[in-house]
Length: 136
Length: 80
Image (cartoon, rainbow over all chains, first blue to last red; front, side):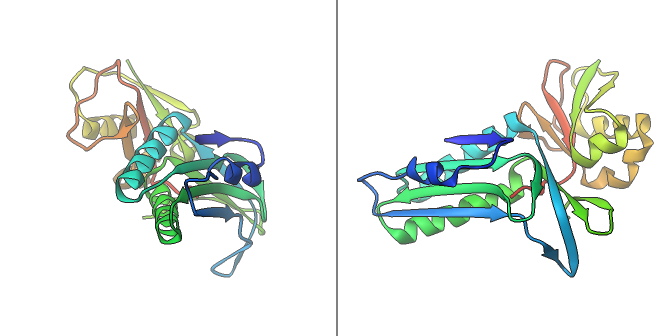
């Protein structure tokens, strides 16, 4: 399951959706809104996405991951819109027969998501300024 | 005319989620970047980092574009 949502992510339901008797390991990654970045204080983040392409890119990443690890089920959900400190921006759940595979596949999916999936975040700093995060 | 979806800072500096440019089928991604900057000079500072997607996939500078393609232009991604 791959989806973008404007609503809070139900990570319990997301995790349940990948559990099965075929898998001995389930790994869940949550990305959450952090307060401090290099000494600056974040008040909130705005996420913007290009949902159609984001879902296509995530499907590609899922199929790349499946070619490398014996994945049973995958669920990826990314939130868009206004997020407060501590809110969950992304959740990735992976089930595999064994834990090493599940950890590696989960790490691959979040690392690649950050590189290639068209979603952007805008910082709302505590001094009232805003700034798009656009890594080089 | 070619419709170009804009996102994040590119959308903000242009002031619209869509840019419309005169287009001849077969012109390339690089030409699109030049046309966009000509029409919206505020994009100039980010031109070297702008990415173009054609039909939901990243496209290289020499890739040709048709007016029937779904085209988007945006800065480097920062999701997660």
